[in-house]
Length: 224
Image 1: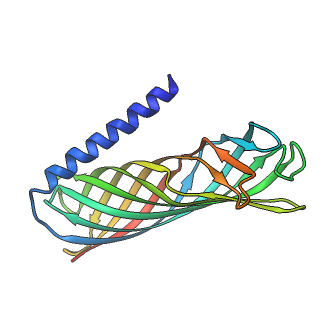
Image 2 (image 1 turned 30 degrees about the horizontal axis):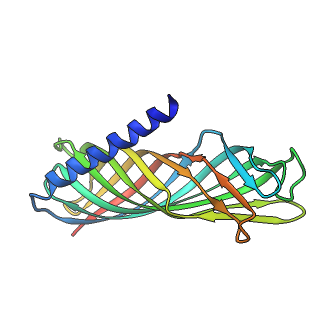
Image 3 (image 1 turned 60 degrees about the horizontal axis):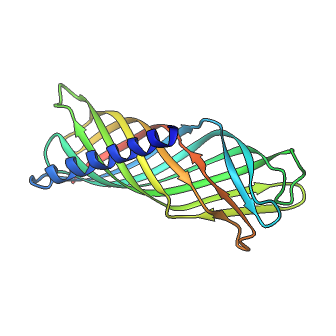
């Protein structure tokens, strides 16, 4: 039931993204550049470790808050609709409980997460009243790199992969500073299921790792 709900949400976001995008293509507007910085929080999760020695076992993961950096290139087709190509990178630490991978059983060890991704985001902007206006956005894309570095006293293990699907829901406000410049504040939910995170030797693999940051983000939007 939980899996079906997740699939339904992702299908709904994709359909909505396509509808808004194709409606937008009939109009003309302005290009914009959007650099951003933010902080992200995560729910604790688990993952599945597969290895030659142990066929399958659960790994508990307790995430720390992290930093998010991003850059977007977008186009306003109308005053109310824009489409954006966005690159984002999340970095955060976590406490991970392994029972293998060369680490003492049941000990918590430090993990470093670095996840970057490309998305196409569609936005609907409410008609501006004064300097403020809210907007809603949906996005979809793929990871360009996902890296998990596990540090222990005995060794260091790096697991990585790319190409996993990314889905986003966005709510924000923009404040118009000048005709070309605006300050943005966004709340963003990102859904990523990291799969096939492997060592270079491919003898261990992490699967089904839910990496779902809630991000408070600040950005500048420069129209040109």
